[in-house]
Image (cartoon, rainbow, N blue to C red):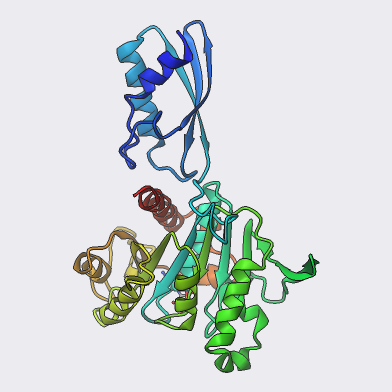
Amino acid sequence: MKDIDVLNVLKNVIDPDIKKDLVTLKMIENIKINRDKVNFDIKLTTPACPLKEKIKSDCISSFRKYYPNIKPIINFTSEVINYNQKSIVKNIKNIIAVSSGKGGVGKSTISSNLAVGLAKLGAKVGLIDADIFGPSIPTMFNCENQQPQIKKVNNKNIIIPITQYGIKLLSMGLLIPKDKAVIWRGPMASSALKQFILDVEWEELDYLLVDLPPGTSDIHITLTQNFPISGAIIVTTPQKVSVNDVKKSISMFNQKQTKIPILGVIENMSYFSPKELPKNKYYLFGKNGGKDVANKFDLNFIGEIPIDEEIMNSSDNGFPIVLKETNVSEKYIDICKSIARLIVVNNIK
Ligand code: ADP
């Protein structure tokens, strides 16, 4: 058996998301043939690939069909594809905008936990808190008193982000005194955001999440018109009144000049399950509001997060809940996997 025979077998295995075979997608590496054993690596496009087991069993089946006496030994590696190679942010593989129609729906809580979740799955993650009117990321990451350092590179000021729980963080809130937020509206905030993306020692990032202010603002326009955004996530609560606000966010991302792909909708505070009756779900803010919005605008419904005291306590104490192993953390991790998958599928389109 030769390498080409191995590749021919693997040409029959299709990546379920991208719908192309593993060989065409250049996912097979390091083939080593040793009598009746074949070792090879499958390079996934995201460390968060939820379809690993399916891909593995399809490879085994394909060998069984064409070379029943050969035993494949499969190792998984991953590399998030860099679609920004030629852009101004070539070190940042994917920028993800997290947005909401209204304030207080849990956008920052979701952004923090997605950042930690993606990192937990093996990705290199950065998070910008661009919500200057209610910056909460420094509290959620217990770094309110830290200031990002500045260093000079070729006579230019470069910001060194804060690193907390493996995430590289920057918050506009750390730069702006709380009582000055209002006068920071408009051009100042926009130019600060540009600096936060371009003049920062991010090094290599698989995902840079940007926690945007609620609604639509100059900051949204700056982000969407100046940077390649892999996708936007819209956070909402189930209340019907949120729908109209979400609609505005959607039309902003859909504008002809910018046309940012919307990865989908995450519904926060979907229901409440008391500890003593964990199977019971009480839909305090209405049922299926997020799903209905997603259906109405033909968007993916990425997932739902219940109302949970521990989410709030963890955030307040500077420790996003995904750092712990809980049922809610699993929900967040599933959402992270879906997001990583949606980005791959979108990028390949
Ligand atoms: P936003 O960024 O949309 O303004 P935040 O993320 O700051 O909202 O959340 C607002 C408040 O709601 C915070 O106190 C946060 O801890 C709490 N919160 C967010 N999501 C949940 C949830 N699923 N369960 C309980 N409390 C939550």
